[in-house]
Structure formats: C-alpha cells, structure tokens
Image (cartoon, rainbow, N blue to C red; front, side, top):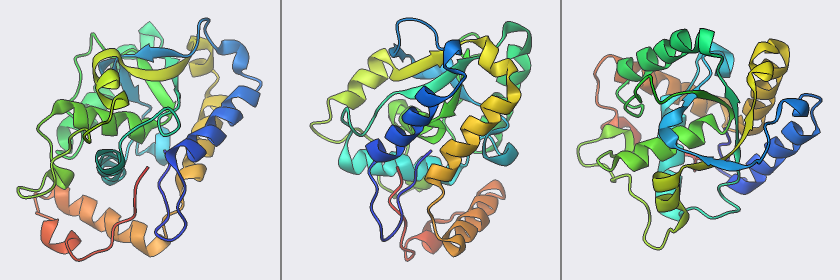
Length: 232
C-alpha cells in the first residue's frame, strides 16, 4: 500500500516491485490463475476487511495516493500489477456488505460499487486501487475540500485513462488462497510493512483528522499548514 517518506523518496514502482517479488516467491503461487497479469475493472475490486489490522482501508492514505497520481501521473513503472484474490461465492455477500458499510460511512472513500460487480479482494495495492477509483469518479477533490485540488488525471497521463476504461493490471489468485487465511494475512502484513514509512507523529495526526471527518468536521484549515507526505 506504499507511502513515501517525507525525507526519503521511494517510487511507487519500487514499493510494488518488492511486494510483487514476495508474492512470486511465496509457496502459495500455485493459486495463481492462468494468463496473468490481466486487466480488471476497478468496480470489480474491493478491500479485505482484515487488511491493516482490521481497518480494511485507511481513507487518508487513499487520498494522498490519489493526490500523488494527479501530480505525477502513472506509467508502467509507477503502476505495476496489484495482487487480487477471488472471493468465494458463499462468502461474497458478507464481504461486499463490509466494503459497502465502510465506504458509505466514510465520505473520503470512493462510492461503493454494486454488489454484482465486486468479486476480487486486493491484498497488495489496496490504497492504490481505491485512489484510482476516486480519480475515475471525476468529481472528487483532495480530502473532499470545497476549494481543494481536484482529483484528475494529469495532462499527458496515458495509463490513467486506460485503467479507467479497461481496468488495473493485476495478478489474480484463486479461492484457495482466500481459504488459506494465514498465508493471506501474512501477504497483507508484508504489503503494509513496505508502506509503513510515515513518522509516528505524522500517522497520529492523520488518525486524529480521520476521526474528525467522521464527526463532520472540515480538516482543510488544519491540513493547509501541515506538511503532507507524498503518498504512493
């Protein structure tokens, strides 16, 4: 879910390259479906509720990643394939409900997809995928601020519009990996460790602001003078 440090710059491609290597080297690769990677429509992808220690997805991370994409654009290096797992049909309704509840209760998140669409849970690149969803909506702004920067594809970005039309590049794993809970949680934990480079005090501030958003507060005045990390 990579986020770049305030001082040490790490590219999106560097973060996901390590994640992809971990996935490729794992003993679970026999779950990988054939003809991979492929493009998957954004509306078919949701987050795993157990990601980030049960948070599923962190709205502020999502907006920071979207902001970085809108400033710097995408490329093959900056948008390598993410890893998805097929959610078993018997568990899909509960998973879809968890995604919908999270997205409906937090205005910073993308508008939820229809239940008929969502079939894959991301276990790497979760915040990246949802940042793409925000931009694809076409009418979102950074942190939903009234006068904030619009979240739009940067001029000259060819990959972004392709993702919006055809989907994100992804490696898809079969239901067997979903049932191997220990392996799936380990993969998500590895992905999150790669992205956990924000200073502790900065993460704490963002957690406070996140709670403020739940209460309907406008964080723009607070964040306007705060140095934000470049998110990836």
